[in-house]
Image 1 (cartoon, rainbow, N blue to C red):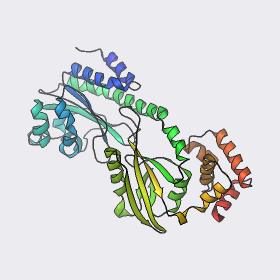
Image 2 (image 1 turned 90 degrees about the vertical axis):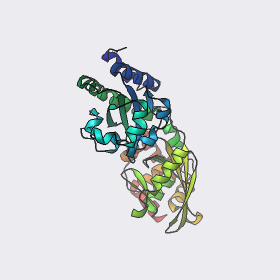
Image 3 (image 1 turned 120 degrees about the vertical axis):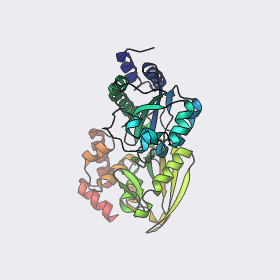
Image 4 (image 1 turned 180 degrees about the vertical axis):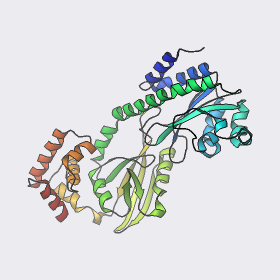
Length: 357
């Protein structure tokens, strides 16, 4: 049965806080446009499906194998989007009809389901995630139907972004981040695409001083152009496979072992809280940072140690407060404790102490 558009939009926004409603929204879209509907999240790097597709009307078998026909095999996805992001276009605008009917995607995925026409849209939701929405049926879509979907796309995108933001706010990220301070090796929480989510004091120092790992544009990389994507490939295998992996790399002061451990993530269906991993960096015992030893010899707490390491790099207290989600008053209190324990009264003295070891 057709639905009132305001009712459909209301359900779309409710789904930002109640993700279990997304299957109902697929059903409502299918009823409204008399077509099968699918919401398919994929990553930005290699157009690979992530998470669980949500659909209504499609054959369950073909939904299960849709990842095999995504990416390179789906002309709707793999080609340059001909319109601004979020625009609704028919597949015929992406690829000529005759060419479409010769594709593996059409003959092995659409045709067995008796589907011959498709309209959809593709838009970014989070830092590493896009959503592909596809509606398919056995007859062409009218301009009025495409226009209706076009009106709904901004609401779908906004609802998903709200859900992503809420997921970040209420996920266990903060508690997990705090727990990194209690890990006595360099520890980095990273998203599936390599985005750095959190670090402890040891990792802050290691990333500033080593020749193996570095952070560029917010993502962690192996140093050296030939290894640009090696760590990201390993991260994807660990997150997708759910099994830890050890990597050994030769550094300037000896071999470094990197352990990648998958981390359970939130239950929100789609958002910025992507599947992630814990990256542990094991350095030779003799290479333990003098800075870390100095901090611990003065009985700094993990939080104070992190602040000391940050300020010792010449960064400001305001930057620390913002980048570590710590209130200004809390940061000031921690700084006074660091000054007292280290026997100094100025940040410049902390920099000098860290430099001299």
